[in-house]
Length: 243
Picture (cartoon, rainbow, N blue to C red):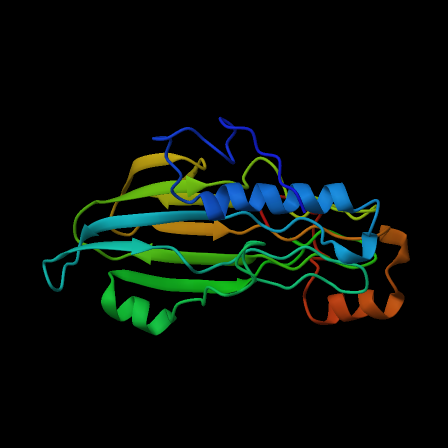
């Protein structure tokens, strides 16, 4: 195998170009570009699109200890892309980690940080439809219980471009993250810094679902019945970013 990467490209930059997170964000782009290139040749060996890494971090002062804290969001992993013969894995995370990053403990998080986690569920309907369905993302919601304002920083991708489907499969839903403060909802962008978080504010993360694989009409009745019985699809509303 020969890799041609001329100097100056994002995959072979000139120093001192920053390369932090290169194996994450750029790595995801590279892997999925290879999937798309190989799909017409070896369709049985590739996956549809996975969710992208989109995280936020919150810093503030713990009201119980008086100490400063920094908390990174690792809940609510997105869904994996489907492949020939297999639905995508739900809440597996990005294509380059394949589930190797464990979800934190709700109880330990609430013990160590001034947060109340009120929801940590699968996100029905987030996986792309197809003969094989994309894995589901998650619905995560927490309340900030500090006694003074904190700050939130966003970083990542996956809000604008949804995980792609293959061979007639539909894309998954993209990420939607938001802050609800004093009854007002603010949709977060993928790159923001120092977003104020006030006591009682809610942070909601709807993570992306994986892309579907194969024609929608080819999904079996048995598998569709399973999806409905287990709540993997939302039959009460059309597929949209507010599920």
